[in-house]
Length: 171
Image 1: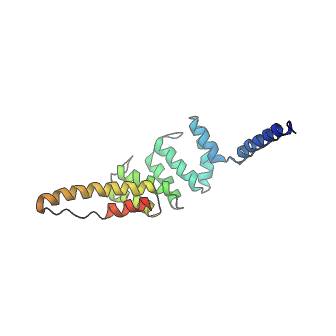
Image 2 (image 1 turned 180 degrees about the vertical axis):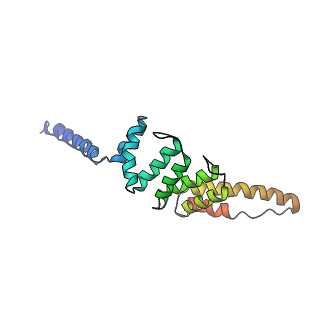
């Protein structure tokens, strides 16, 4: 019986390893290729899935174009892929669109209002990064407004947007 236990444990461990390898899909394989800096392989794995409409793969294509890994850096192409993923409700893609517009990356004009629109959409759907970014952005604006108001009449404006967005972060 003592010889059975190590053999059984070895079998269970090997079975777990083999099942996990069998369950790994193209996106997981693309992640592994990305970690090895094998961006050509990552692109080959992700591209067909993105073309077939997989939102996660579409977001990955956007990231690849935004970072220039495996493809020439191109924010217009990145935004196109993020839009496709966002149309399927991918929160990271929605956030990335906001980031591109907010920062004015590539050929996009810096447009906080457009960025805010996308951040707000992601925040309302529960994206913590968007909630935090908006809360901080509104807080900065409100803090500046409060200082000006204090100087003028001693009554600072009441912060509203940043407080409600920070509350969303903690719900």
